[in-house]
Length: 70
View (cartoon, rainbow, N blue to C red):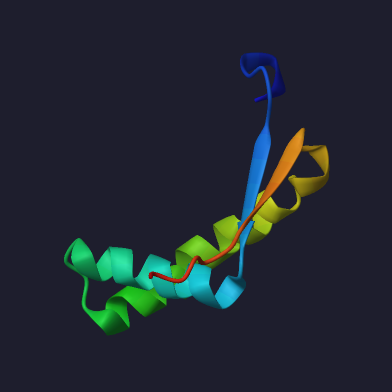
């Protein structure tokens, strides 16, 4: 990836919020809530663990925080 990009950014977010949003996205695209939660645990989370190992090599780390709606 490094040779194809000028910069590598790593975005991190609260784990609970990330999982909640992943489940909601899968539901929006047609999975049942149970199927969506299973997919997140069996597919998205293992992928996330692999990606987390690359954090130290990022040029910039962005921490995503929830902004309250006014």
